[in-house]
Image (cartoon, rainbow, N blue to C red):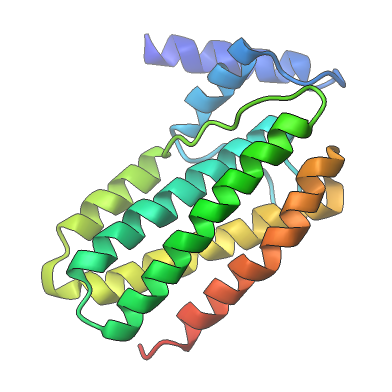
Length: 188
């Protein structure tokens, strides 16, 4: 049944790719089914996602950041890492609210779906079970997640079609890049 849903969603995406309209709610849900694999969330290298796919990818990434930061609050051993995780969580919560406003102001308006991909779910499970390796695993996961977010945001700024979402992406990109810079500066 899941394969049938994925096949139908893929067919729908291929057929509708030539159209200039925004996807309907059912198409957004089908797109979200594709995002469960984690492969549709980033688009191609250098490619800007459609409005809903962009917003869903950023919302899902934000949810991953917040949930992993919550784990870091209780499991990290480094005080600096706990402080950075708290900042990341607060910034991503604020960005999530800003994203909802931008998506609501887009034409047509929609609500982003903050679903975790299969990879994000697996990463959270691994993080929860990490034990004494928590700090290093958290940092490596966060670096990868922030690199992906920087790519998605940059691509949307360069090629996105919604002025409201482009403004959101432009505004949040420096914050996400700042998180990445701080993560890369942590002792390895």
